[in-house]
Structures are given as structure tokens and as C-alpha cells.
Length: 491
Ligand SMILES: [Zn+2]
Image (cartoon, rainbow, N blue to C red):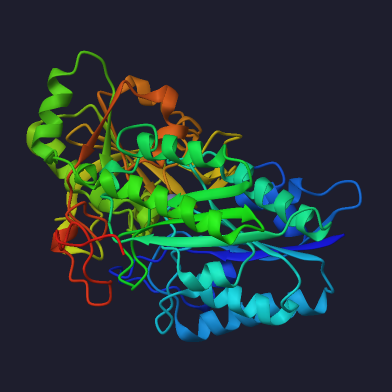
């Protein structure tokens, strides 16, 4: 049995001003053995697919692209990557099954549902009888087309996402059993016209912990092969944006539909808990001053790299300087400042203008003299657990500086999700020795930073991933959608 493993994983923030072009796609594309080198020992979706090989099952890694969340994919870049994927699927075939590693919230400048489009292309390439499995991120904005063009669709069930490998392995095993003729998967899809605020999306806390308990109940039922409650991704302004339920049964479409309906109603009943109060930067710094144990992990919600932001907001750094909190550690993506530090050299004093290069809401830039504490190549490895299961990271040339106001700033050349505290420890920085550590994420840092902070504070900062969804100008999302239109009802 030969299974193809391939895909494109992108979470598109349509409010971002950084489009994904052909050069960005190429930089992040792996082929064949390159996929094995990066994923085989990680805990990613692709790692789960590779782990399905064994016995008479061969998994053939073809082409895979994992993007750092950013804006929409340009039309020519999408055409090029889709053609490469489909060409690989066709030329390396025939295959008995397809394992697609997608995100579920990819958007093209001219294609609001890239994941549905790719699955449609894969289906056209392999024909109607070859099973297609797809593992998606929990932030997928699942569409009817994605469900129609696949046989088994599942999303992660954790946020932070520490079950990517498990979910993909589960999808692969269902595809294998389908090829063997042991099961006949049938899927039911039920959109839920609600958006859950990013602040409420941790599956370890209410309300999502309760939703996941409901989901576990459905998964236990006889005949249910898989089930999914997708949180959706609120920063993609597309018709499918929002929550959804998908249930896969063995040859029983009526049961699948009934389970999906029941689960959707359970989600819907909890909708009043899909938003929460917010903490200002000033309040967060007051909490640092009075915290019984430190460090506090200050989550920079408006500059959430995993949500497609540029990673160079200095709102919290400015607030710390204004409040006189010197004992703060933060990472800022700023290749211009890194270059200035490289020119000055380790130990030198340098005048820097840090951050806020693309979005005035995230500034003003910090103008300060600073001591260059260290210069590094920026590559590090974390065997996990990390959000999404990534193992190998590369922040590019990296400078550690201490500002004249006392704060420690890690300046990186590349934008990297803060999913691993090894990013800091590999530079000789111990997060536990600071009063406050800023992480530019919402839930994604929590797995990799688990041993490195005393308590977390989600800070209401501005930017393209702000928690204030009512301040975004949506033009393409469906209406009505809760909580924007409180009168929305489950269809
Ligand atoms: Zn996600």
C-alpha cells in the first residue's frame, strides 16, 4: 500500500500587510527526504503521517510547505505551489491513499478557501475512489468543500497544539483501514455561526475544556471513527470563518449528521462564554510588581506571531520603560537592529531604534542606547512538547542587548513563533531570573514555556491579532455571526 503525504500549511491573517509570495513559499518548502529530516523526529502533522509507515504500508513524502502565519497567498504563488503538489501526486503515483497536511485557514488573494481548493485538486488528480485523509489545525475555518473533497477530516483537539502527531496518525490509520476495505468513512459537517475569542481558546480551560469533554463523549460512541470541533481562526475575513463540527462514522451518514448536530448544539449553548474581560498593559505591569511569584509570562495578544503578526511590537517594552520595570525580557524581530549590533560587535554600546517597523499601532519604536550582550546564529532545537510539534527552529542572526533602561531584548532576524523557551536558554538567558517575560503569542507559548514561568497574563495589546474583534473591518465573513450579530442562530 502506497500513501502520498503532502500539503501546504498556512494560517492567513487577511488583515496582515505581509502577503505570501513565491519566494516565501519556496523558502519554506520541503521535498522528499527534506521532509523526513525536519519532521520524522518532531511531533508535527507530517511526523504523524510518516509514523504510519510499516508492514506493507509505505508513506511517500512528496512536497510540504509550512509557513509562518502571515497574509494571504498571492495568486501566482498559489498557482505554483498547487501545481507542484498535484504534479508530484500524479508523477509519483499511483497511490492507494492520500494524506494531506493542511492548516484549514489558508487564504489566497483570489481564493478564500485554499484548503478546499487544494483538496479539490487532489481529488481530481487521484479520482473518486482513492481515500483522502486530511489533518487540520484546531484553528481551521472548515468549509463544506474541504469535507466534500476528503474522506476523513480531523483537526487537532488541543490548544496549545500538542497532539498534531497523534491526530495525523489517527487520520492515516483510518485511511489505511479504508484502503483495506475494513471501513467506509462517511462525514457530516455542521457549521456553528460563532466566533470564539482567541483569549477563550485554551482547551485546558473553560469553555473549551467543556466543549472537548462533549467531543470526547461523541468519540466514544459506537461507529464514530473521528470527530472534530474546530475553533476557527477569527483573523481570516472569509465566508467560512468561525466554528464548526465534523463527525466521521463508518458507513452511517444519518448517525454522523445526528452526532454533528448534537455536538453543534452543545457548542452553541456555551456561546456566552466565548469572550472575556481584558487586561491593559499598565494593569499587567502592576501585576508584575505585586506578583507573589515571578516571572509573569506577559502574552502579547496583539502581536501574536502564530496568528500572523510581524513580531516587532514594542508596546509592552515601552510600557515597561514607562513603569520603570527593568527586570523584563522580550524578543523582538528586527533584522535592522540585529545588523547594527553585528557592526558594533559584542560588548559594544550601540544606539538602536527597535521595532514597530510596519504598524504604527505597535510603537512608537524604542530609541535607546544598548549594550550588545551577545551575538548568536539563532538556530535551536526542542524535542518538545511544543505547539504544533515543531522541533527545529531558526531565528536567524540574533543579538541579545541590554537597554540603558535595564530591559533585556532578544533581537532576531527572522520571525519565529515563541513556541519554545529553548530560544532563550540557548542564548544563555534563564527566563526564571526575570520578573516578567514577554511572549508574542496567546496559547502557543504555553507548552514550550511551561517550566519557565509562575503565572500567565494575557495582555490586551494592539495589532493585527488584537483580541478586540469588533475593531476589525470584516467585509467577507458570513452574517449573522455571534457575537457580532447576537441574534445569530444555529442553522
Ligand atoms: Zn492553531
